[in-house]
Length: 436
Image (cartoon, rainbow, N blue to C red; front, side, top):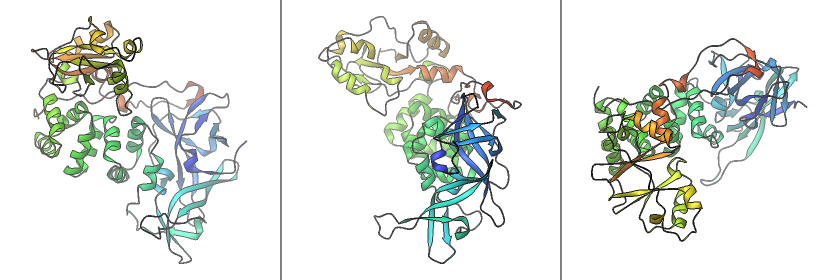
């Protein structure tokens, strides 16, 4: 049954289905247009379909909104969404906007927006859920509902709005989804949100963006903030990004980064990008041969660890930071599960796994990973010291075409049941540092 009133923040992430019950995608935003005297009118939904493509779904093609799902007539135009003049995205642009009460009782910030159905397939903005300023330095202000005609915008035209509420709405998005969402925002709004995002969160999103957008966004940040974000990125991703900048800009950022992080990035930049050294990451899990299975399993449980890096543990002689002491071998997590917690990792090494050198070609690394069904491959120098590991995601980034993140072939309208399957995509491939 269709609801006649629904809050937009609750729509974000809701599934969209065709009449046959097949899932088409999920809601990412609601599009409205302002009217002279009445509340803004809803013209459609921004829907993410398989392949991370954002498309426009006209409100006239929505037959039901309710119970956490949207039902459509079955017809969707698959051309990528482009925001038109006069259109406003509720989540991206209205949430966080400061409003003044027309009765002179002060100001408040929009935290959510209700849309209401006035007639079949006709929706408009209803109540606004607002929060007044805090009365104490450590508290939150009171919340209140108001209709559109009871308030007016406080900000002058073109003045940026608070990004706090928008960021809260994006808090549960995965890095790839956050990256796509940021790229969908108007340029000024994108920078505003990027400025407010925590360093680690912005770093995660940057790692998922295409080369051009990475460079544009990092270049808009001041150098100190950009360096802080680069510190939070995986060294190989940071190296890829810095290599796309001018030599002068890249060096300036490296000078501002934490010395240990900058050292890792410089180390990776010294290798040809199409070799194991150019693909590897310098932050695998490294332990001594005396470490136990219980200790190894505890290390791979860390929330911040990438799944590919958690698939195996490297065992070396001291020191345990790349370049390590002599590389002894790897232990895959499935092998650890077959032994008691007190078993020492040095006794259960994978003896058949041959490491590669930094000069090994990316093509050879790909062949070995595929031939032996591996998730990661150790990289050692001429003294058999571990310098890093190449993971399967590094190799996929290398193998896939450069434009996979922005694949955008236009297609005619089709029924929901023929929505295209997901497209695979890649990180920017870097050129040798300083070659520009």
